[in-house]
Image 1 (spheres, rainbow, N blue to C red):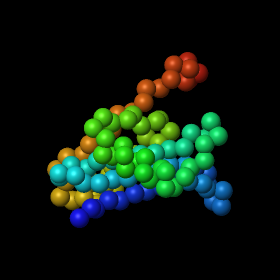
Image 2 (cartoon, rainbow, N blue to C red):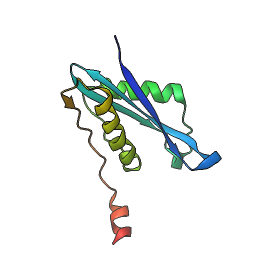
Image 3 (spheres, helix red, strand yellow):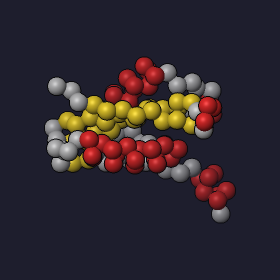
Image 4 (tube, rainbow, N blue to C red):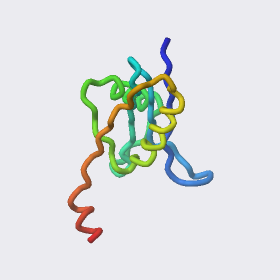
Length: 110
């Protein structure tokens, strides 16, 4: 039996809210694995639900983890908490790396 949950990542508010990504969680061998997919809006990408879900599942099952972009870190942290509540039998939560902040952003904030 495959037990998997997912959550779409949205941007905007009210009726202008649009889906920009997806998070997928699954318990494999008593360990919670999380996969993600996000469209790169600055490069003109539009989110495709089927492709996004498939990419998130591939990342969930991959041997090497792909770092999460800073733009979705808050959503991932909340989703990890949700997965922990949902998969009560799990003993371990997969650690997900975060992409480093670009130097350009660090300079702008100083």
